[in-house]
Image (cartoon, rainbow, N blue to C red; front, side, top):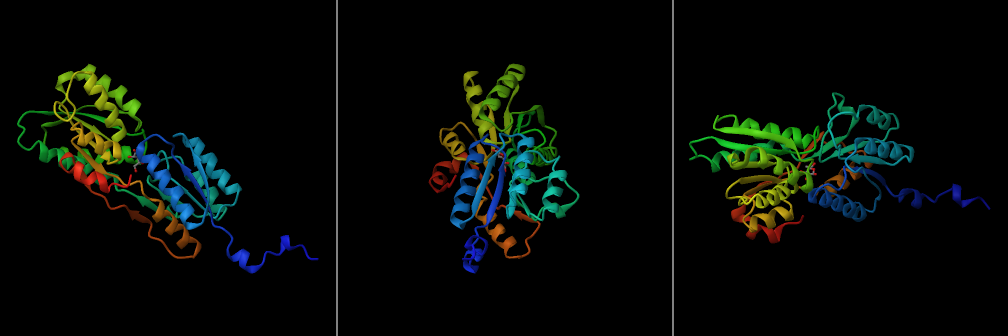
Length: 308
Ligand code: GZL
């Protein structure tokens, strides 16, 4: 009898599962954990086979994962690039293999935008502007200097570069705002605490404001501020980004002044983009996540509505 193995019935071929290869940055923050959960749950919901790789925040691991997806001939490759540069070679290999690529969350530096189908994620510059605008409003009656320390995200990452840019674009309007020190805390609680300890040792009571590029570093810094005998959100005004659960808990406890929302719930949009790609539908080059800002005054009311 003819070997059925070689002759899949049309229905089976038609129902061949879409295979999505996803290379994730790591598991560095609450935001990242929520992002991973959203992607895994949405892939399951969509009936896709998901090949998921965690790069532990190392670019070379992401490049290895993308090469492995190419070798396995997945239908679509998606990833959140840990840093902006160094992707053109491996993206050209994906293009040569005719495997479409979707960027989620963070973007890449390239002049050749045929190397990816679409980039979906937040506008990090606008997130920095929102943080800056909140601070300008908060300090509008402050006559003297407003001394700021800044905990940057991962060096070379789109969110770190753009959140810094947007914040400075707003505060540069008034010379009273001074950034005394700015250093990376790599988006983690541990590093955020360590760097804030160094800031406090160097600048002590001169610090009026902490601007943290994500909630995890802000939560680490809050511990350092308390261990230094100071009151977070009172002695030092704290501005952060992501609006994860930990940030709402800190705001409800009166230890964080404000968190700018950055939604990790990109799973549904990603799966819809994969379906469109496989159906041959065109996609916009850029899909921007809509998001807002949460000052501590609204935290208790908003908390029950939060999904991440
Ligand atoms: C932002 C995302 C950042 C978060 C951090 O979209 O890339 O990475 O702000 C996370 O919490 O580590």
